[in-house]
Amino acid sequence: MAEACASPAEQAGQPPVQAQSEVLSARQQAIPLIAACMAASDMPQLNLALNQGLDAGLTLNEAKEILVQLYAYVGFPKSLNALEALRKVVEQRRQRGIEDAVGAEPSRAIPTGDALRAVGKANQTKISGAPVKNAVTDFAPVIKQFLQTHLFGDVFERDNLDWQSRELATVGALAATPGVEAQLRSHISASLRVGLATSQLRQVIQILARKGHAQAAERAETALAQVLASMPER
Image (cartoon, rainbow, N blue to C red; front, side):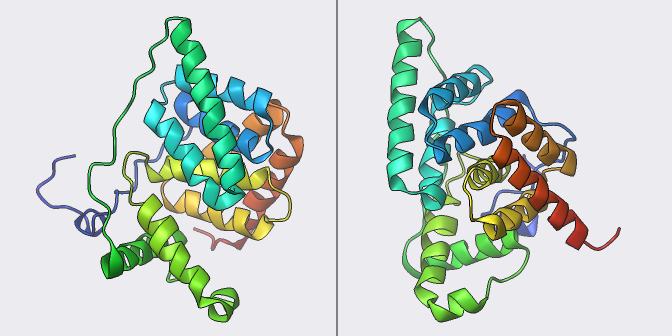
């Protein structure tokens, strides 16, 4: 978007908050389902979800980016297994004559050292709504360092996947993971903060329920209700 005056977020190298829509696109609808299947290690359903996503316009690099990012939330083994599933899906589609769009690579170099920590902290603050400081990060400061330099630095600075898509993936994965309700609420809030609408998050819940992830849908519905109840009336 070429504008004479860039926003503070754009000047800081962060992607601008996207315009809000009331409904998820077909491409967006596939993302939380892919993430939930990956988190649940439901490989047959993951194969179907990956095909659905690619048919709906996800590029190969976007699909890879989703599965790579989610290692930070559900672990390297599940991420590696999901990437292998994607590799096989792409090969099978190629054999059927389907050539999926590769998609963009990140448009800028990722900083290193102190600059990486600074940009990661800025990204974390923007997504979280305030500087992150709590008893856990005080108790183990290294986890805050890793979150800022790696997750919100190395990963979230990769601009070939927008922040709304990243949050849709994270919500889908966390909803499918028992015992992480606090983190799910945090990312429901982050989803609203990066421009997703409440109606779109309700769509995520409906998609999860319709595709057989009833418990994930229930956790997401509870988390969304709690987040909305905690917000000041506008």
